[in-house]
Amino acid sequence: MEKKYITDSVKEYLESINTNYAIMISGEWGCGKTYFIKDKVFELIKGNSQYPIYISLTGVDSEKSIEEKILNTLIRFIPKNRM
Image 1: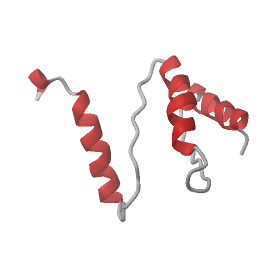
Image 2 (image 1 turned 30 degrees about the vertical axis):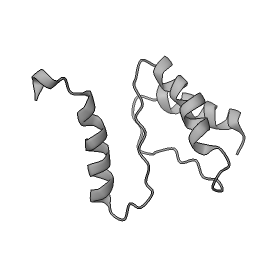
Image 3 (image 1 turned 90 degrees about the vertical axis):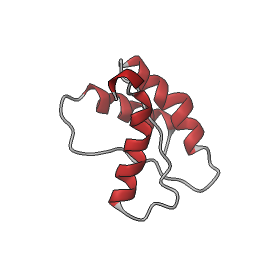
């Protein structure tokens, strides 16, 4: 998949009011997916006044595990005086 196609898809996704889908980037191990996401896609998201998070799904075997990873990442953003 071309990088411009991915970034254009992300821009369209961010500009949509309601979405009922996710964007998945696939490729062989070591082809630079994580680098591209963190270097290019995160910048698009930040430019849209949002803050991206990154979780790895390596070793995940259930929806509950995904939920736990997301919550464990998000909890870092809650100010200590609000917990």
